[in-house]
Length: 197
Image (cartoon, rainbow, N blue to C red; front, side, top):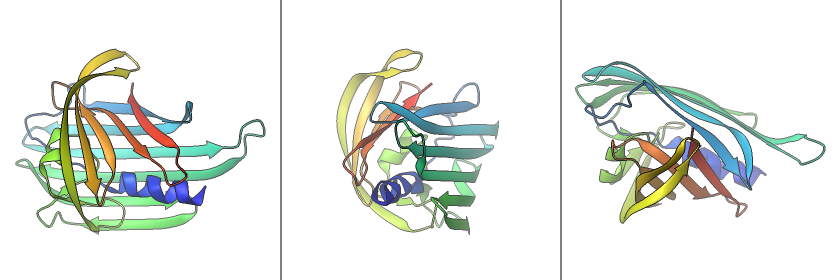
């Protein structure tokens, strides 16, 4: 399970870029985190402020349990705050507990987009800022076109991108440029998917 945890940590370590004109209506994006057909937690983005000056709070709470005995074999908790002004990241703080291993980050943007993945501008970047440890991750992006993807409230048209390099993720964004779905392989070979509620 530790290998699964390290892969998940790397996944969430990336933050997201912001497109100042594309904040989600309603101020929130929330996802079920699904592995092997089981709901193992939640991933939530909360947006406050105006398009010119806003904050994004990201919260992830995951617990992988052994079937039948329901013992937790892996847990991951992450909370971060991104401060944006004029479409640019100004400041990022985060606190993470990766199965008992703590991480804390307090940094400026260094001109990079974070890898929280909430906005489609992520796929226009060659480098992303890890929101857990502040490392810079070099990435490549392939545009795979439009597809129908399922959300908890029905199917939407999602523009599919595949990120590789320092981060390995499949991402889908809806017509408004908001994150609709995320999928990646954990190190144990299982597939983890964020399904939008």
